[in-house]
Image (cartoon, rainbow, N blue to C red; front, side, top):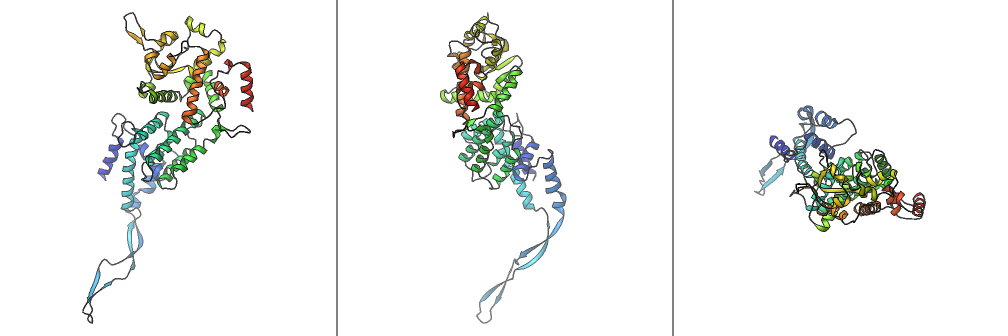
Length: 438
């Protein structure tokens, strides 16, 4: 038993830089193997130590009647045939004393802890992990980056059954990632939305009471409220009103999309799509999300304090009250391959495109031309103006549609979500308002 405990804690402490919390694992294991309730956080301890593995259950004996066959055979010689005959003793019922909790139950529980701990570790450390396929590693890493919330027990369980292969696991991981992005990052559901259901699903999957397709179907059904179907059509369009209201509050706080908690994940996925197309990864996730004082890793291309004459000239046609929407909209936000000093964000676009040097010929900022793939894409624009901000925003929402399998009704809907509908001609706004309200 001591050796088993050592193996368990070896898994939890394998990554010395990020050892795993044993209480978190025990809670997850309890969810996978026993039950889940919404009671206070220590109910798993009460269940295990006060109901299941109690001294009374181990040491208190109870009478159990069992069928028994004597473990010997009586051999006698048949006097008439001079041959040996074997006579088995008849089956009889006997009473024995046993513990309420058998050694086999304890052994099974310990073994389940050991096997689950291996996969629990893998879900926390998917990169460069030889126990995982490349696709498993990719999708578990995505789940960790987006915030796996309450799905880690379900992901862990998917590795415990020999009937679940890599293809089925990837199907599950994709469905979970899409569910998290659409339901929580876009449609702003509470973090506990449907958690009891999918905690139970983890145990049901382990017990072969549910299949991967069953769970994927449930995930899709629980997103029904995120979509709508206009009259006389069969198309399902993404209902962005929840997200729009959320971003509107962020604009009132002076940030817009910059304060969206899904922004870094979205921009990183947008960047990684270009890495898959062109190679050469230039943004490290850990550095991208690491906060540094006076440093930024997401730049406002059109700056928050556009004091330079170049910016005033490029945006002179826009009413002052609308400048904040151009500044904080999605198309104006750019992930940087290297964080820069915030004081450099006010540079003119032509200066941002090219490296900047000080009087000592030392590089003080990297230019878009030699930055991330997203930076290189932006550097292809000759100028940075309202029209290009809207155009890039539409391109990014096009990517969102493809990446997470959702659909906006039309370009007006995308423009409205970007908070840039004031840029559309009056006739387009009228048409868009009619189609949106129909």
